[in-house]
Length: 342
Ligand code: HEM
Image (cartoon, rainbow, N blue to C red):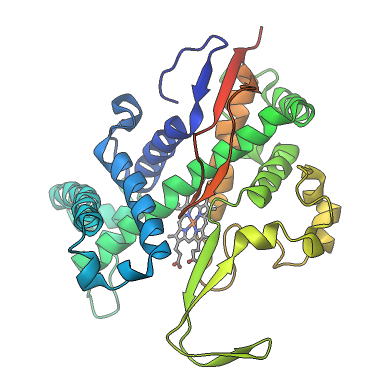
């Protein structure tokens, strides 16, 4: 994580975590290192993604902004276009840099496994049976999706998990015991794949945090043909929102204690009884999240390593309130005290 005072001072964690997860996705999917944690939240890409998601929500709530020709003339619309270009530029820069590497190495060589192939190599070297590859436009769309879907969502997931664990010291202690057991006797402070799968209680805590604070609170679908839902005809072309937030807070689904943080809802016995559509932080169906395993592992590693080194506490006078934007954020951020363990 980016450098911050490690005494028992309070730290606003969400911005640090956004930078961390951006560095992680850039490194893991694109082998690209911008070290944005050192630049801070003034990093143009990070700041643009944040501002754009607020603009998207503002537009969604104001019907008169829905018409693009009108919207683009407003100050908000003009700002959106500027940010949009900046975000695309980041993707273009990444693609351009890799094309140069591939041209230097020779595409054939890169495709035959002379070095570790990342997601971008696969996009750039993919060929259909006729030898055609993805167009620049298609590759950029994939890079944009990965960058956006792969960092802000995970930052939200980690932030709310840390919030819940700081708020519930009993669960935090139990996770720490599990982490200590997995880390016992290791010289290295790194977690291996085998270690990650042993962090079962941590996984339950992460899922319960994603139930209470789903990182993606609403999923939208454009209806391609008319259909009837509970007696109401929905016309083709309409947009249908699936409100994940409401589903995850529905007492009929979760019981009257739906507001309580109870990780045991996700024990293996309880999960067997759970409706497969009761818990959908990664959406459901054919277009669900393709990064969900990566995201869960990333959350586990980050949280385990933090809890191995620190006890975390909330700051009593800092009110934390969720706000539903493209991802679930905290209005004034989340402040956490990191108390080094002896
Ligand atoms: C806690 C973290 C994450 C959450 C909660 C999350 C959630 C979601 C959701 C709800 C969707 C579906 C959106 C829709 O149906 O309209 C989605 C799609 C997607 N996610 Fe994630 N995501 C997370 C992390 C990631 C990561 C780390 C990656 C990349 C490694 C990723 C890559 C994608 C991609 C590429 C799609 C589009 C899939 C498609 O359209 O077929 N996500 N994600």
